[in-house]
Length: 284
Image 1 (cartoon, rainbow, N blue to C red):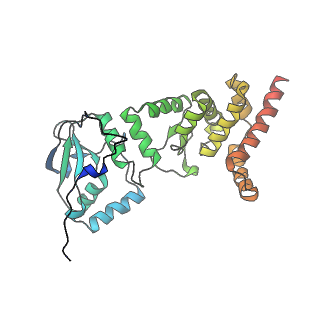
Image 2 (cartoon, one colour):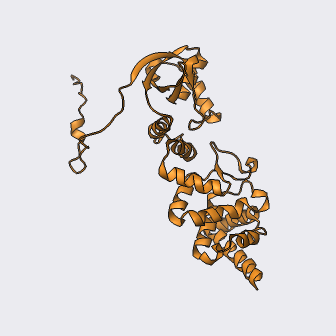
Image 3 (cartoon, rainbow, N blue to C red):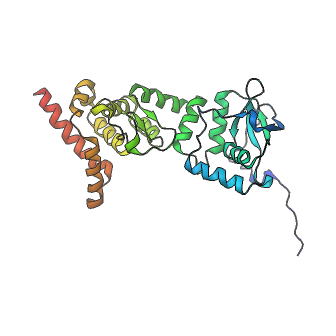
């Protein structure tokens, strides 16, 4: 049987319902060059740190190193002959571990914001890239929704972690809820989300480890349903000083297991009862 090699032809994928725009700007045509690894750098404002899972990947690349599996590293030129890695950090680190001195690079001329945009676009379909990584890349890129969320978080003393941190090791204000927070902002608006977050960060020494998606969502639902409670945020936060987020979260998890209700629903019930009692007592 004779094998017929197939040409690359994109025309078969054209969709007449969604024609490609006639004009587009792909940017300046990149250069291709072998660059010494010593001249490559990582911008931590949008790039991932290499932790346990990534370290395993680096060691695997080094152990099984092959140029056929390497690919081109995408970089942008900085000052004084230094280049910033946009895509290929793990591959390049594995090559360095193997003892490789230089790697093939595609050099693009773009701003820092565009570097972050490119990083997010290249990696958005990679399973290992978390919502946390994408959020920080989009903030650096100036993405409108990400920047709006960052402003609300800053007002509530909240920061999305760059990598997973166990709840018991979290500092006040740290959260892993990068995937849910944009949805909450869109659904409830900045005022509700900001007050919900402040109910956690401005009570009980910041309640480290309690900025969980289920807790934040339950607070948003509760406050969105009772807009009068938002009128006096100081009174609201005073009322929340006596709410034990850790204990109530674990109780909600147990109730979810025993009764089949969601953790968020169980928290909504306990939050509603608590605030109704405390705020009514304050106004009596």
